Amino acid sequence: MSAWVVQVVVVALFALACGALVAAWMRGRLGVAAVALLVIAVAMWAAAFAAIATEFRGANNFATCQTDCGAIHYVSAVAFIAPPLLISLAALAMLVTRGTRWHARRAAAHENQG
Image (cartoon, rainbow, N blue to C red; front, top):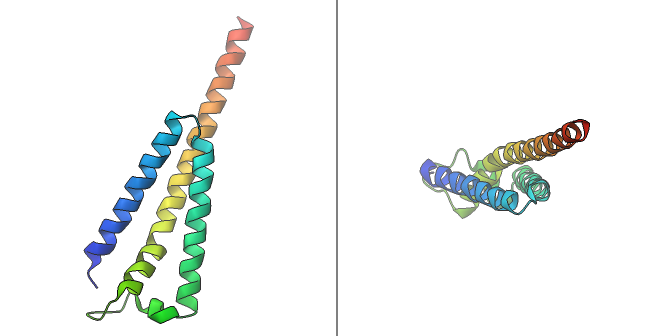
């Protein structure tokens, strides 16, 4: 298995997710986009676990295939590795959304006092 293929795909997924979250933030929809990213990542991870557990077309051998790796091995490797990163990114986006709302409420309350 050529690890650089998996690494490039994981980095590309991370970059696409970051771009989508930035675009959503610019439109004021970061919270919705973060929840959508979380749902997609959890579903992808569950599908990867199901494929690995049922040994679907040898998906459970993605870490041990040496020279006979197929597309299913690369897909299962990416589907197993990328979701935790995307879940963390979604959690960060949710924290940013919550912090932005909290900051806006504090500013409004401070304005009303004085």
